[in-house]
Image 1 (cartoon, rainbow, N blue to C red):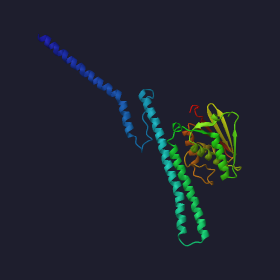
Image 2: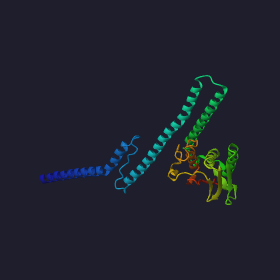
Image 3: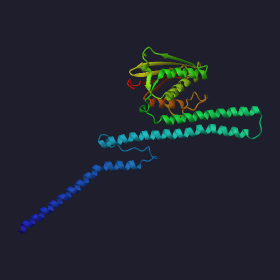
Length: 312
């Protein structure tokens, strides 16, 4: 009886020891297995708005946790880029707004220093009016950039005709600039009106095309732009070609940045918002915008837009 009791005690001790070993082993291996996740959590907690340059350790680069870290790092890169662009945009916008405001303030202060002749007042008011127009144009473009930043193809339901928009622009711009030559050519690939119809916002598309046409004419000695419309694979292709001053090759990748102005156009008035706005509008319409330029020979701009579904 005593032996049986001792045997039970031994078996109980062995079971408890085994459970303890299993518990310790389980804790050890679970802690070891969960440690990489804990490390990722700690790394994420260290990232803030002032340290967006930090990245997660991607480990061996092959397992699921490594894939998660890679995905998170890519997201951080996009956030950091967006933050830097926004910071630069705010800084440049503040500078661009301050310049005409400072000019207006200075002109008015000088004007009020003493009585002046009617002609002097007229001359000063004309200069003030120009600054106000420049300020108004800048404000409108900044508002458009803010508006188009959140738009997507799903926001456009109305059908608009690309060719009709271009004919309208041609008529209006030549009235404003009688030295502009805007030549529009409809390719033989276009045989139906539906091939020129896209789902979009007529006002925004008009703004985009006007910016491209105005740049082409403004920076060309002959003030001419040749526009071609083609159709292929359910898309309409617009090509704007000029023989102007062109864009330096090392600056082509910067032309979509707000407030960026090429080194060869510093003496021409402008804010450097136009192409950034054009890019956003075309992207919002699920289109693409491409530039090919040779300094001193000219620039070719190609815009591709998907046509509207026929059942719409």
